[in-house]
Length: 470
Ligand code: 5AD
Ligand code: SF4
Image 1: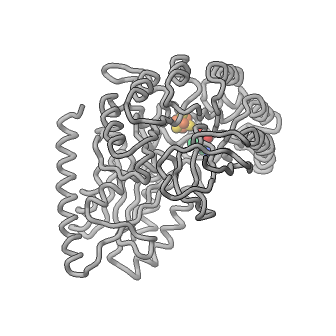
Image 2: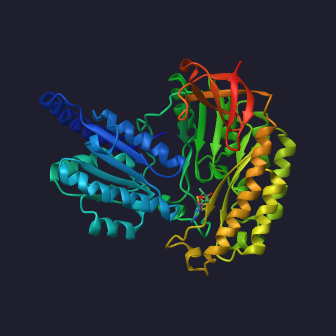
Image 3: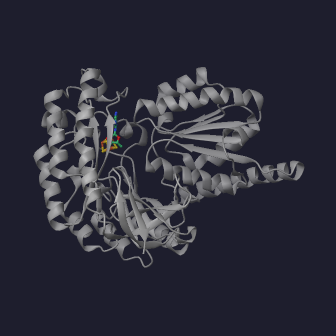
C-alpha cells in the first residue's frame, strides 16, 4: 500500500532519472563513451542493500559500471559509522580522491549512508573535503536523482541530510548482485539504544513495511530467479509493531514460507530480548527457513549487559539458546561478540568465554568496542587497551576451536549448497553456502551457479569447508 505522497515523490524522481539519462545519452553520442559509475559500500547488509538501490537508479540513468575509482565519472561512497575504523577508511579514500578530482574536474563524488547522519562529519566534509559534490543521509537515498540533477545544474555542492524519515519508498529499482539471492528490507531503524551503538541515532526509529508490500516484492524477485531470500532489519524480532494491523515476525516468516518458488529464507538480525517462542516454532515448522540463527549476545557479564542496556541476562541468553536447540536440534547458532566495553575487565570476560563454551557457536563476528561520540557509553570510564587486547585474545581462543570442531563434524557428510560464485582464491572452484551459512569450496562447472546442489564435505579448515559435488 502506498500513500499518494510516496507515489508523487517516486514520479518526481523518475523525471530526474529521465533528465540525467538524456544528458548521458548525449554524452555518448558526442564521445562514443558511456558515463561510468562506482558504488563503494562500507558496513552491514542493510548498507549493501541500499547500494543495490543506488545502483538500480544509476543504471536507469544510463551509467555503466566502472572498474575502479580511476575510470569512474561518478563515485558514491555508502558509508558506515558503527566503528571508528570504517569512518577512517572513508576519510582516507576521500583524501585520495582529491588528486583524482584535480586531474579530472568533471568527476562527481557523492557520499551517503550512516556516517553522514552525524553533524560533526558534515562539518568536517564542508571544511576539509571541499571536492565532494553531493552528500545525503540514510533517510533520503531515493532522492539521489534529484540531488545529482541539482548539482549538475547549479555546479555547487549539494548537502541534503534529514533528521528523520518521512516516507518509506517502495519500488526502488534495486539491482541485486546475484539474481538468485536477494535481500529484502522488512523494517528500518532501531529503538533499542544499546549504549555503545550509534545505529539508533543515524537510522532513526523502528518502522515496518506493510506485509503485503514485502510479499509482493518477494513474488516479483522469485519471478526473476530468486531462490534465497534474506529478510533484513536491524531488529527483525520486533517487526510489525506500530503497523495499523499489527503482525508478528513469526507470522511474516510463515507467509514468506508459503510463497511458491522461494527455496531458502534467512533473516538478520535478531535481538535476544525480543525472540519469542512463536518465532522458534515458526523456524521449526517452516521447511524453507534455514536452520541458522544469528543471535548477537555481545557480552556475558550481567553488569556489562546492564550497562549496555541489552535487557537480558547471561542466564536468560543461555536458557533461550537451550530452548532453541531443543526445538530445532540441527540449528546452527552464530553471534556477535564485543570486547572492551567500558568496565569489562579480566573477571568480566570470563562470562563471555563461558557463553561461548556453553552455546558452541558455529560462527562469530568478534569486535573490539569502539567509542562512538554521542552514545552513553562514550561518557563511561573506558577499559585499558592492554586489558582489551588480552580479553580479545581470550575470546578468540575460545571461539575458534569450537568453530573448527563443528566444521570437522561435517566431513564425510552431504549437504545441500547454494552455489554462489567462482571462488576468489581458485578459479577452478565454486563457492557456496550450506543451510547453516558455512562456506564451502568445491569443484564444479560455472553453470551450477545459482542452483542448490548436493556437496559432500571432504575436508575442513577453521573458516571454510572443502567438498565435492555429487
Ligand atoms: N563498537 C564495536 N562494535 C560495535 N557494534 C555495534 N556498535 C559497536 C561499537 N560501538 C557491533 C555489535 C553489533 C554489530 C553489528 O556491530 O556487535 O551486533
Ligand atoms: Fe545497535 Fe542494539 Fe539496535 Fe543492534 S539492537 S542496531 S546493537 S542499538
